[in-house]
Image 1 (spheres, rainbow, N blue to C red):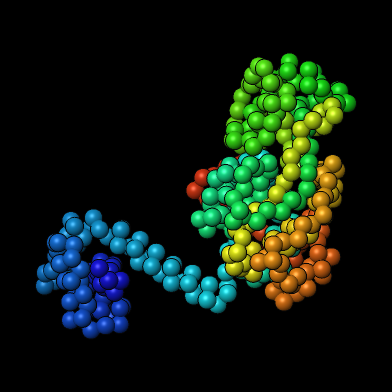
Image 2 (cartoon, one colour; image 1 turned 90 degrees about the vertical axis):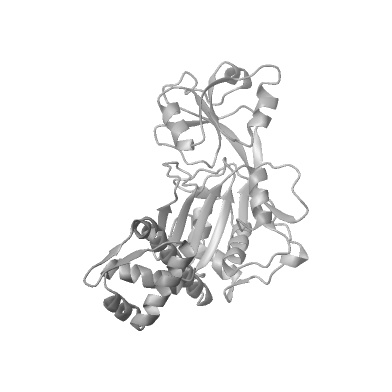
Length: 363
């Protein structure tokens, strides 16, 4: 089956006239007829019933028509994307986020590099840290941000970005809401709301509940769902401090800050960086993650010294011809008005605050 044969058949199907279909395809009528006949031979039956004054689709023609239409549309989309890529009009960047990593962490870096990388298109994917490592090695994502992760393969470069504590998130009406801090004994008597796939859950279990399981109430794979349940008084969430939260919730530290985690950036060692990935890695590693914004509270995040990347990735500190220090001086904690971010939902819609499984493109 060849694309021109599909195009000829679709032209006949839309016009029901071989002469007009040939004109539409800018070929002679015999050439169009021959192409349709070859397609019929390959599919094993007539697609078009030909009469002197009337041309109709056969039952087989009607059955395959929508599929052939999709084939032609897909082929044209492939050609268009390839042309855009060759003209550098599209700069794809796929970032994986562990379940406990909020998409709010990457919005400022994305907004910054969008000013230097034309056609930036970002896709965010959520998955367990181990799964994200597999996606990196398979080339399905370009970079990942994870929390605590064990046994990182030697082929994966990883950089520590900051360390942050876990806090209790609860409704102002909760019985623990007036505490200045919450102790371990209090948590053992409290109903906890569980974030499905949380990478820190084993650590919490080890520290707080070594002998008995915690009082788990409801659970969800979406932070926003858990927050609504917490706001309704169903329980307490143990969450990373950077996580955006509903204004109806309170955050209270845990006594002694017993639970913390290190947020790390991962990328595949030795792989050639695209301009978009190169910019993202540099901006993310050099960012001051200790900044406390008006709507993102990270006052207790500690920023380690930026570790020197392995020689294979110790790139010249330029992005798209611009010196990187000049870019970093322009970093701000908010999205810039000069370039907007458009969120296009994927096939798995979610109202999660994290906007995971979403695509962002600049315009």
